[in-house]
View 1 (cartoon, helix red, strand yellow):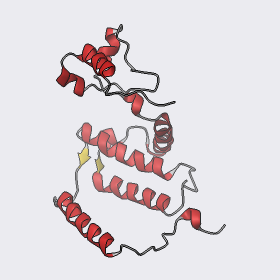
View 2: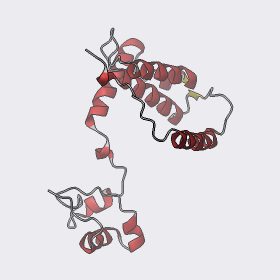
View 3: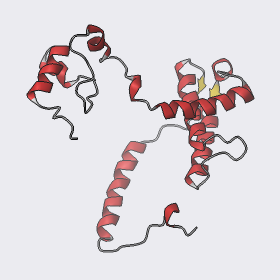
View 4: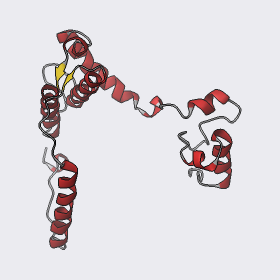
Length: 180
C-alpha cells in the first residue's frame, strides 16, 4: 500500500480549510497517515488541537523505559528530589555519559538494577531539563566554546579524509560481526 500524495491539491485544500490561508497551511502540524489526514474536517476541537504540542509522536516505549529509571531513582532518593534540593548539571551529565558509555560498549542493562542504561541516560537528561525548568539547576558547565563552529570545521576535515580514502575498503567491525 502506498502513501497518499500529501502535496496533492486535495490535501492542500484540506489543510487550508482547517487552518486558513496558504501560509498557515504550510505550517500545519497534523501528522498524515496512510489512511488519510489525522484531523477530521467536521470536528473543530481536532482542528484546534492539531496546532498544539503533539504528545502522540513520543513512543510509549520511551515513556515506559524512562519510568523504570525514574522508579529506580524514586526508590533510592525520593521522587522529584531534584525539585527540592536542586542539582548540578555536571553530576547528571557525568552519569548520563557513564550510562551511554556502558551501553555503547555492549552492556544494555545495569547488572544490579536491571534498568536499561539508555533509560537511565534519558532520566539524567530529563532531570537536567526539569531542574532547569523549575529554576533549580546549578549550571556548572564550563565557559562557552563555539562547538557548532568547531564541528562544522571538523566536518570539512572529515570530508577531506573521506576524499583521500576513496577506493579503500576497510572492514568496520561491529558487535554483530563478532564470532559467538
